[in-house]
Image: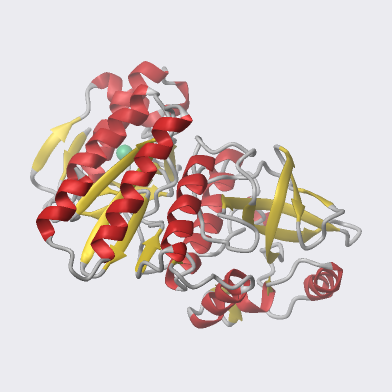
Length: 426
Ligand SMILES: [Zn+2]
């Protein structure tokens, strides 16, 4: 199997060993120790925007397989119209998925957002078409992408001296869905099936809407989308909405979070979830994607309890000292000119300076490795770079945080001179 350029498939840029071909075809059978290095190879190929592989079947024409990404994982799909020989693994397979459990949910922002959430799951005619794992993961990537894009496009991931309004996030997501506009199928806007408030009135409205959904494609199971603040996650698959404080919402599939490092103890959250009707018209909550937020009143997204703590310290200081800074939680990866991806935990803009803040929350080797790589790239793309080690004891954390807040204060001073600020920061 050969790795080729998408732009020029006749140029071979690498190949897969016999063992790698085996993993490529049967990723679920591969041992972790072989799977991870292989995945890295595929990822490198994908990241360099090459993306194409030539199948090893001995068909007269070159059969091409395309690498694609979905949330944090890769998959290879058959190129439409390419023919494979009768014995080929890819003859009747549309795609093979490669899961990456070590990585966080780091979507690249694409121009088009596909929200055909249940296209495969409930397509009655092809019920056994895809495996459960694939479809659930796909769906959750879509819920996650939708939530991330709405948050970013509506500036809901930005905090400044002004308090974020309590309702901003719900109206923001609604506006995003209306403006974009996203449709479930032709002539069927998602906004007709989205509810900003999760309470009895709107659940009843949604039930009525789902009983007889106008223009809904026959093959697709009708669904609605809800957004809700989540006070606490009760179990792996249950949440408690703060709109309906006494009701436990059971989610059929396990609740997805942006990263494997986030546990369901990172509450509060904002959750986007789907509702369908079961046979006797009772609502069933099927899939959910949840992202931790600063608080239930200020729903700026964060990705861990550590980040929440650091953000609270920073924003309190900015407001107390009236520092004209803006803190952003970047939700999509950024790329350098040579296509290296990175994403700081927080970006602060102050006057014309860019400050990156990194919140270290683990001493795990793979995590630190990733952070070190990020540090190298990030440093070249900002004016100041700070990291706070949240695995250290509280005295050290406090000290590191006060270095940052003092630097912000000195940067905000009008008579600030470049050199003196540098000394304060060092
Ligand atoms: Zn083939």
